[in-house]
Length: 519
Image (tube, rainbow, N blue to C red; front, side, top):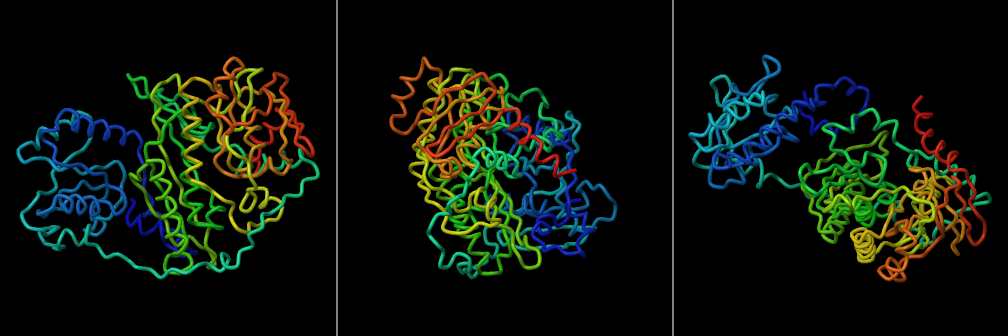
């Protein structure tokens, strides 16, 4: 299984590819756990025996072994493929080297310590074998059935591998872009909110993630459904927050800014959970990079992501790529999915998005500006996205995130929720669902402004007794909207209309949209 998986992920699909199931990896979570425990045992208690360790991801054994040999410098490697454990008989050398079967790690162990390390894996019930050795020189050599089937410089497969220099050209839809912002037409704010909550990009994904066990090992503190899932670190007053985010519509209108926004949204979700960003992994889903306009999207998106990662001090620790995602020569939106992990340094700082107590004060932190081009309401009302993407300031984004982090660490907030797709009113509605509390809010914003997706904003709730301390901390960057109420009703007064909706009805729309589509 998993043979040619990395290449398969970037194939263009048609009816001839429907049966290529051998490229799909077959996972075994329990085996994965055993492998992880054994590797941690070697790292923690047998470090004197360990030279290096690497996971087997894309391109399987050839990638992991060549990378390990190249990083070592000054040495080569010889592998005997007859020693590699196989699920099936008769596998070719090509299949053995490129299989991406899961639950495997590659270790380099000091000579004479093999039995010591093998025993660790045996005690965990994990099959581990010696398949080769380090050699002098720089050659990467493979043996199969007593014959040499490969003999190449190891660096040619890793640090000196060929690098493509693709032609880049601005896509046609980004030329002569209208800079004017789309203006939503809203005659009935409440009905528009109900329609928004039923959009698949907004609606609850519970019907998907509830099919998975989210309580394995009972470490889950915050299950999926809030801004980030949170798992505790056993025996420590710490936890990890985990989220995935991207908005392909933003990248379609501006790949570079949209790439930065994807990282920033992930960071907001991490911050809203009480954590500080640590690093990201990515999944770069794009069209055909051999086409100049689609390579431009890939190139610019990665640049934007890089700028945001530097700003948030969140290195890219891993990732993968899926290219050629198009059908009938129409590519997908550029979609670099960002997975981010953050550290919560005290369990008392864990924060969720739902309002907790009637009487708490509700604030929006960050400036609300016109943000409609590429927004969900533009797509909902016109069936397309167009125009110049709204402005985004990374420095201001970081400033707002740091303010929210400080407020959480000072125990000033009852809840925090990032404002993204669907805008401020959608974030307010989502915040009422957890405890099914209502809100009574008012603002000088227009009804349309409540659907703006301008970045760098949070909706938070603050206990009344901490109002002064919170306002002193955030200064002019927060606007009080009103308070949480216990009548299970959402009422928000804008300067030109109002939203008036029963929370149970809103929750039903939000939770029911996806299951209805899947029937």
